[in-house]
Amino acid sequence: MYYFLVNEHGGSGKGSRRWDVVKPILDERGIQYEEYVPEYAGHATLLAKEISKKSDDDIRIVILGGDGTINEVLNGIEDFSRVKLALIPTGSGNDFSRGLHLPRHNPKKSLDMILNAGNGQKIDLGIVESAEINKKRIFGISAGFGLDAIVGTGINTSKIKIALNKMHAGKLSYALLTIKTLFSMKTERVKVTFDDEETREFNKLIFLAAMNFRAEGGGVPMAPKAKGNDGFLTVCAAHGVPKFLTFLMFPFLCAGLHARFKAFFIRDFTKMEIESEEKSTLHTDGELFGEVKKATFRVLKGELTVLA
View 1: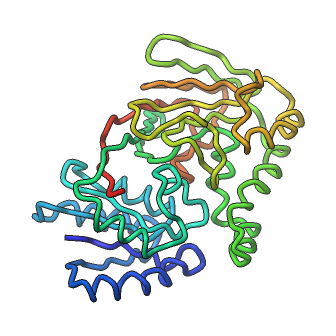
View 2: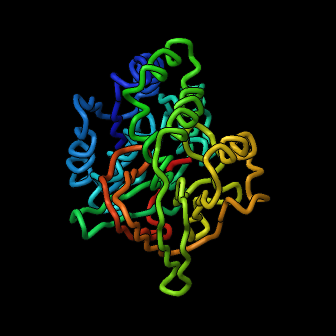
């Protein structure tokens, strides 16, 4: 059975419009499905939890939404072995769909891929935990500390994004808000331990992103070589230089050419522990995790089956 979670309120109404395209096709083909509409922040998590408990032996959850809705659903699924996940993108960032090379602007093609995906394919997920605030959360795209977290958690209420969404240029909002935030934020001193072995210290840390896919923030390739099915997460950290120099390097970051600069540190890991001198904002897939000094990131190898 297909269970469609339709975020009618996100993407400036795009979810509702794309459901109007998809629903008649399902009805015409006689495909059995149930429709669910999240009504408030966090509701998709509760709906995913409800659906994943059904006695159905072939649970296929199809999300019409953006990266935030996907994150809510991932954190509602109680048993990943019983659920297959699919996506018809309707957000402005759409980094999850970008990581899976899904069509982002063609709901008919997306639906055809889903209906013909068979048993799907396995991909990794990430999880971040902090005993400091007694919290853990799964992520599909990335989890970040510092600049990308401040931008990611503030973007949905940003007047810049609201205005650009109306002009169908929503992903530009990430770049503009990043530049604005860069010059107003504080940098941190952070100790990072990889796979219980190597410990490094980053002075003047601007951001640290744990990536499952190569891009976040509407397509910014933080980890150009990252793959969602390789059994690793990839960290990208910017540190040790004045913020104005980071600003000058920003075009190289957007082009995926930042690894050539010493200011950027990139490596794969399966477990990463961070400890900061001061509390900083931490996000999972652009959703606020909390203000923390310590957190642990781990890969969940092959945890999710996607219909792609």
